[in-house]
Image (tube, each protein chain N blue to C red):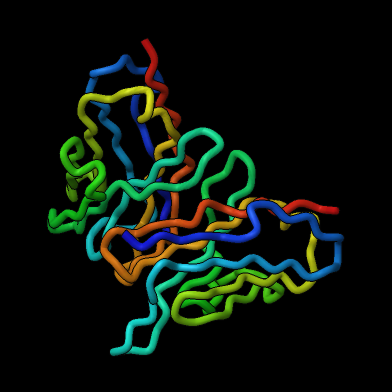
Length: 113
Length: 117
């Protein structure tokens, strides 16, 4: 299994400031034949299902605000919220789809400082 | 974007068989993969398995011995059966559309299954 490890477990950021969440995979999720990273990010608000934010490590899903961005390659990835808004309070998960057995990170809880 | 709705029992006893159905609306179940994902209270997400509309399946090895996923294209539904449940199976169970590349782009609201004697 590919183990996904996120850091930090929780994060408090002031409104308007940058929030950065990291995700590390136990093996590379970069597929050499197409040079794509098989990594997605989700946002989960209380009482709601996860919402897809980013796939291919850096492609924003339609309708996702451009303050959300994804970066990284191989085993190390980052989700950045450039200017935190109140509605961004949530738990964020990374997920790899390099293997048939899809696995998620443990989640990072983002709060307002 | 499609809508997904899970249905099933809320409360179960240990050793019983869990049966959940996901109804897809606003689009056809054909030409996509469909997944079940669960989330124990206060914890993270675990992929259970998926099914293609043709009936081809993939399962999480940790659950494979107890899980069956099936599809009924005539009803635009797919289903999950989990045998011999224990308290460890207590979770919110989500169904989701599984993009062919591997991410989950549409989710149901989830159904909470509690296993307790």
